[in-house]
Image (cartoon, rainbow, N blue to C red; front, side):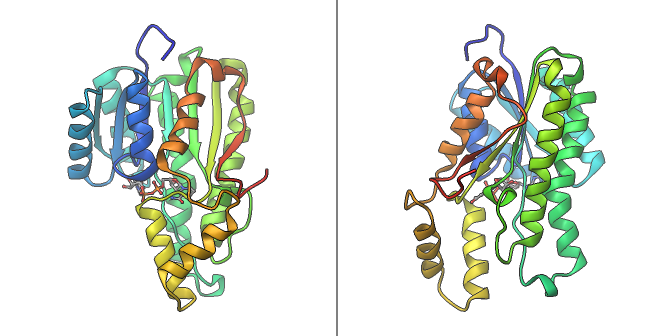
Length: 261
Ligand code: NAI
């Protein structure tokens, strides 16, 4: 990190996949990183792992769908490391199917986990986290290329991620004069536990094998392969830096060419 003082970064859903890579990268850049995910044991394990790598990290259990949990999480981060400079809204879930058959519960759960949570955590960080009183801040939302293009059998997911992109652009414009930037990072296909679950879902929907689905997906990506969590984290790390001060209200892809806008 080019800055002199260590900054405080919050990463949601950081026990796995992209969130874990982001937490590790931000900590290696000199941030004090506070992580959250639903399973407290996984959080403890991940914190231990990061600390074992010589990184400054701590965390607590967090359910981004629960307002009280979000408040307690942000307060715990402030108590531990101080007010928040960087927020990475990463926690998310997959979910979809034949739209005519989707139950309210699934629709609501996907929208709540992926979209309402981004508003909920961001508002808490601006207030309890103290960010609204700073002259510099970074809010980075992990959306998806599915937030720009429609995904077949993924209507709730696609709708939620389009919502995240819209929220990002509106808040980015709103906060631009304050020195707080707000951006979305849009991964395409990234090899994580979620990606495996997604392939399982499509294999079942199309009565085929997970390998066949993998091949089909890879053939759609100009680069010919999934991106890695570290490649996504790299852009998050850049957006968190001082050099990225003039990048705001954007939705930037990390997708091997899958999306063009
Ligand atoms: P993952 O399933 O490996 O990790 C998701 C993380 O979010 C886990 O730590 C999980 O505990 C946490 N989480 C889920 N629900 C939560 C809740 N209610 N409260 C707190 N934490 C919760 O997934 P992955 O692939 O690393 O995804 C991370 C983000 O990237 C998600 O927002 C996802 O939509 C997005 N994304 C992933 C892509 C992929 O191909 N893997 C592509 C595009 C976007």
